[in-house]
Image (cartoon, rainbow, N blue to C red; front, side, top):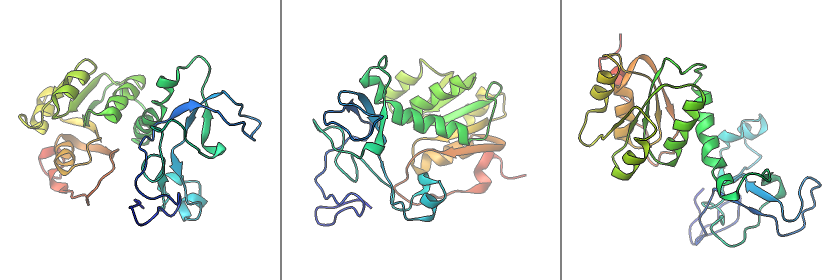
Length: 242
C-alpha cells in the first residue's frame, strides 16, 4: 500500500514524505549481530518488505506477496546519507566490485528473471522486441546477449534512450513515427518477433508488442502498471488468430 501523509504503510509504518532510492549499495557502519556481516563491509540491499502472512509468502513465491512493499517507495530509501534495514536484507558485495556498480544488481536481477521466466532456452535464432528502452529495458538487452540473442529490436519514443540503445541492438523503432508491428515484420522477412518484453507499462506499448508478434509468439510483462491492462487478443500477430 502506498503511504500518504496521513496513512502509514502497513509493513513499514512510515508516512510521506519519504526519501527515494530502491537500488541501494553502501557500507555497514553499525556492528552487525550476524556472523556473516562485519562493520565496513560493502553490501547491497534487497529492497523488498514482505508481509510473511499471505499464501505466496508461505509457499516460497514471495514475488507475489499481496502486501509487497519496498525501500524508497513505501519506506525511506537509499538517497539518504544513512539508511537502516534488517540484516536479512543485506547481501555482501565482493571486494573487487565497486559499490556504484553493485547498485545495479537490482535492475539487472529484474531483467535476468524476466528472460528466465520467458521459458526460452535458446535465443540464438529468435527475434526479440523490447518495448521501453529505460534502465530495465537496457538491462534486458545485456541479459539477452548473455543468453545468445542475435537479433534484438527496441521500441522507444525518447530520443536520448533511442540513441543509447542503438549502440547495442540491431534496430531501434520510434513508435511515434513508425508502426512497430510493420517495422518488426519488415526486419524479420514478414514473420514478426518471437518474443516481446514489455518494459513500458502503458497501453500503446503493450498493443504494439502484441501486434508485432509472430503466430504463437510470447509476451513477457516486466513493467509495473498503474492502470488496468486491456488486451485485444485478435490483434496478436497483427493478422488475427488462426
